Amino acid sequence: MNGLKTMTLMVALTLLLVFVGAALGGKNGMTIALIFAFGMNFISYWFSDKIVLKMYRAKQVSESEAPELFGIVRRLAQKAELPMPKVYIMEQEQPNAFATGRNPKHGAVAVTTGIMRILSSEELEGVIAHELSHIKNRDILVGTIAATIAGAISYLAQMAQWAMIFGGRSDNEGKGSNPIAALVMMMVGPIAAIMVQMAISRSREYGADAGGARIAGNPLYLANALKKLHIASQKIPMDANPATSHMFIVSPLSGGGILKLFSTHPPIEQRIERLKAIKLNA
Image 1 (spheres, rainbow, N blue to C red):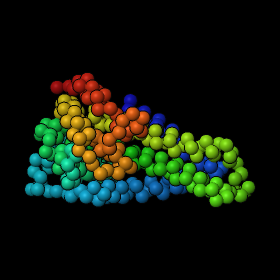
Image 2: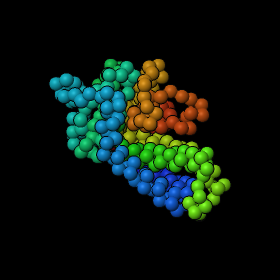
Image 3: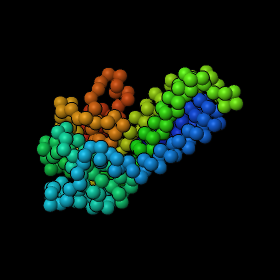
Image 4: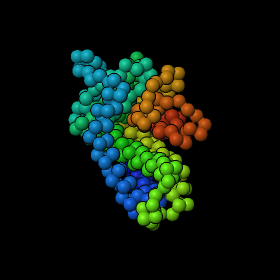
């Protein structure tokens, strides 16, 4: 169900990119939008893992440096029938974790020093299993593409705004585009793109929770971990880039009210309820 929902949202986001491109610049704008998105996707596919790991100063560790963590990752990766991912530790007080890598063969799991301090071994297993589920389902690639398309839409809207400020386009360049539609897309397009992107991210989190429960063998491992992580993340700040917040198991950013509409993560309470409702075969 989550897979179908994600596919539907991805199609909607791609169509939105095409419509925004067409509204802002006719056929030329649509073509530019698609080329721009393809170029950004190519870069993101090959380099996003290295960029985000470097951004958070994650250090790759060996089994001798982190035997318990390494052992958990290896055991669960074998259970999930995945290649052994690289293991990283971030010197961050906020307890959190994320997975990255363009495919299972290039997977990586990164955890903060904070998460290793507050979770039990079983709870840490639940978190690692969640991240391995992301890797197995290629959620990192899906999230990267969604973020890239949403970014392309915002970029096109900004370009159109600057074009209007500095004289707009010639008649030939503007053929096929409706000025009113362009103005509406300029304002609504980026917001709609972000909301669809957030919906995709939330759908993949639910899927990773369920997949992680199956890998770990007990949904309560992750449910108990999420409860601790949510409380701690609200108390301990983290200097996180909003563009990468969707990668973490719990949002490293704080915010409430209307900001929840743009949250990359489902409410913790709902995630825990869904996990408790999962019945695994013995």
